[in-house]
Length: 145
Image 1 (cartoon, rainbow, N blue to C red):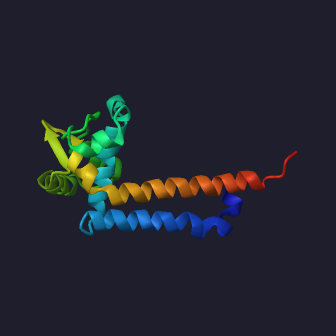
Image 2 (image 1 turned 45 degrees about the horizontal axis):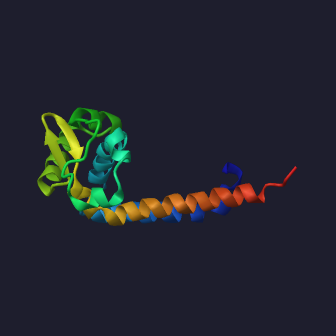
Image 3 (image 1 turned 45 degrees about the vertical axis):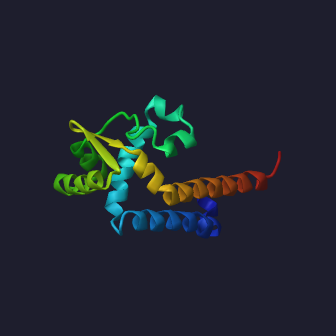
């Protein structure tokens, strides 16, 4: 991959730029909010009950607060290298919009966020498909020995 990067750079960067643009737009121009949502989302997708759900169930709203492993402001600030106060303020805004739910000190992703962020998820899916195609093309181009 590294030796082919110059030839692949446009194909690799274009879906990434689309994802970043959609993410920033979804969060009202605040990319840090997206990073916070992503951190909470990772704790959500890591929960075994999340993988057992169908897309229809998650979009239906029947599960208003998704199961998750939980995370808190300090953990997010540490993992993202952001000031704790900045994360606290942005988390409060995300809770107010209904995208995160607070249970004690723990934060969880909501069905509302999952629904509202469909364009972002579509960009993630497109990026994954595109990267798979790029890697498959590299594999197919390898000489068979």
